[in-house]
Image (cartoon, rainbow, N blue to C red; front, side, top):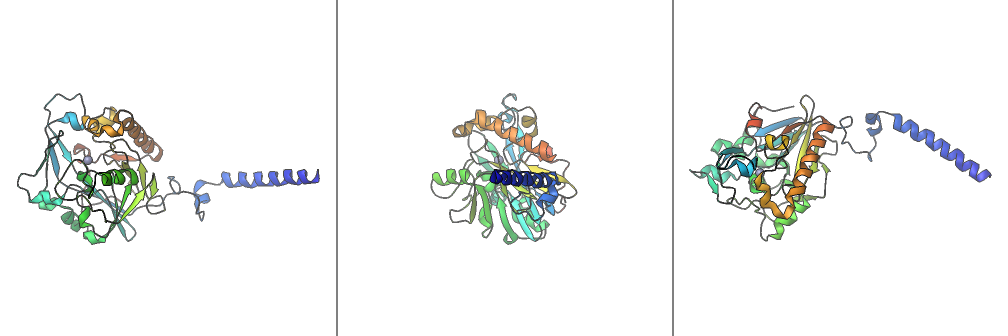
Amino acid sequence: MKRSGGLILGFAASAVLSLAFWSMPISAQSAGDPFRAKDTPQAAGFADRLYILDGGVGHAGSAVAWDNMLAPPGTPIDISAYAHLIKHGDTWMMFDTSTNDSIANMPNGFLQGSVNGIRWTKTQAQTMTAQLKLAGITPADIKLIGISHNHADHTGNITIFKNSTVLIQRLDYEQAMDKGGNPQGPPSMPGAVFERNHPVSLLDGDYDVFGDGSVLLFFVGGHTPGSQVCLVHLKNTGYVLLSGDAVHFRSNFDTRRIPRIELANDENHWLWTVPLAFDRVAALLSYYHAQLWVHHDIEDYKERKFAPQYYD
Ligand SMILES: [Zn+2]
């Protein structure tokens, strides 16, 4: 009896303690608690700056492939290839690296001669080296590169960031390596996308880059098996969600229409994985009250400021 009475008392005491714990505001719980994730708006820290780097344009003959399967055949469409630069304290990070800078040396750009038929062009001013210079840094200053997915319009310049650690989902990395040699990945671009011996940190799901909730990578899948989006928390701007190719155009996200390019990724069971990725993006936008920036949508970026200006 005595023993069970002690148990009951002990249980009651711990219930009171846990009640006190849970009634504290989330931010108070987080302080000094290394086991509590900082992924809530109340607990998250801040990145200092977010820059948009212009990586040139892709001219495509068919909006069907990129925006909406129901677009009239032959409707042309222009596609941006922005990269994003994040400053967190003294650490610089990029999210995606745009198309290969060698395209700036090609008078007619690079025609990606696949079913998607797209001609990528960029000027010398749109190379990543030139764009980083606007922020006063060089490729050697970039410590981390988050990669939305292993396609060459996003990984195009990793070879110039020799010492940067690439944060990529294991599913995308292994798929690239399965093809043998260095990851190239569709759509094919000139030059190796990145080399087998490049420093990487392989991710298995969501990842808190700086451990303070300020920059979060969320696994969404869909477009490729290991596609991820990047959520950046800024003091004045709030949360910004960088789409990668989880979303190609704002219009196809708003209408939940899948562009035909997803059919090319048949191994990903696009018909259900792409809508699931849309849903996760929508859930993240809602929970964090985040703005969505749609990486390939030129119209979406029309009103935004570009490097050397930045968001803070
Ligand atoms: Zn892309």
